[in-house]
Length: 379
Image (cartoon, rainbow, N blue to C red; front, side):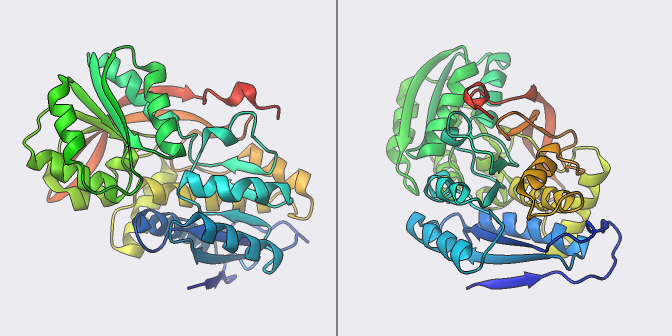
């Protein structure tokens, strides 16, 4: 169901002065709000809308629609938003296969796309575009950090697995890029798979000293529960997508001690992050996730660009976006030449705080890191 959310001008704290005479901005958010993986889309939406509501802007309109994780539906919604709704900016897509279906056509029609999540390699190198910005990461990045961590943890024989879709392939490519050990096995599973008995049997028989998984959403929940039930003790590693706040609640104590990588965590010590975590929990009654932080940063990036440029002057607006003059919840934030972040990526550990499973930062996996594809981008 479509929802139109128009902010009101109430002069709240944190509201920035609108650019005098600038045209209003219309944003179309296409994200996953039903079916498998809906929790990820809900968090991106909620983080984005928290920033918009906090700013109390009358010159920003946001239209939200559910793609139900279906590429054809995402394309249909994008076409409608561009042709009928006349949006200036699209955002919101969680899954890389949906991004690949929507983004190239969007940016070639002169519409800006700001990704709060999916970062396929095809859009970071030769396929980069002046109208495409990624506010989260390039898909490989968090996996590269864990490959690097595996070396320091003296893991020499990792078994790695991910779903068979663009982000899954980027994930294992990223892990292998910096991992120096051997591979006990490498498997690409079905996207949306829920039964991992065969894969767990292969891991058991492989002699692996560690397991690296990229299984976002319900896939990770199913795998971790079955892994624990099978009595497996080989250490698990992964990116935040498989061990973020919403996932941990569903997995339970089977996730305790797991090391995972993220460019954000709730304990990053800066003022913007402290406000975000407190405001999100107050607004929604739950701790924010990685996805919520990415939605929040995406909205604040748009708002910052609106304060220095008119959306109708696309060159100026793109330059305002590229300058990234906003207070990111992750601290230092800047775009590289391909308009993907250059940023620190942390190693986190799943811990129990009171009766709540959560993550704490235990180190830096990669410092001031840029993706491997930027050198192939002509921007």
